Image 1 (cartoon, rainbow, N blue to C red):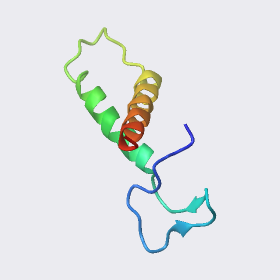
Image 2 (cartoon, rainbow, N blue to C red; image 1 turned 30 degrees about the vertical axis):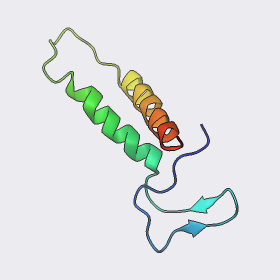
Image 3 (tube, rainbow, N blue to C red; image 1 turned 60 degrees about the vertical axis):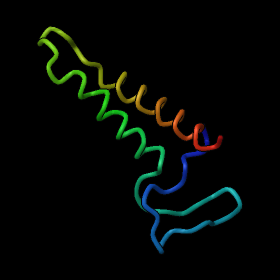
Image 4 (cartoon, rainbow, N blue to C red; image 1 turned 90 degrees about the vertical axis):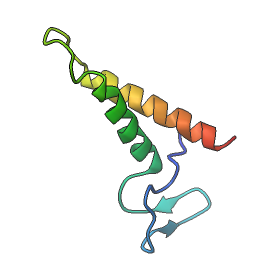
Amino acid sequence: MTDDGGPAFPSDSEGQISDSRWHFLGMTLRDYFAAKAMQALASKFEDAPDERIICAHYLARRSYEIADTMLEAREK
């Protein structure tokens, strides 16, 4: 996925450099969506038994998949 949704919290110091490039500080909207998704996914494991191993890589990958789906839904 190439479209990251742009800045999550735009400010006056950010702007478009060219037709397809932006300059901004901070997280992208994709990162913000992924962080929210990861928070929800991880919360399901709060009370998991000790023998259950949670893979951080799985949570991160799945969170970005959800974020990408959310960005695609915005286009419709």
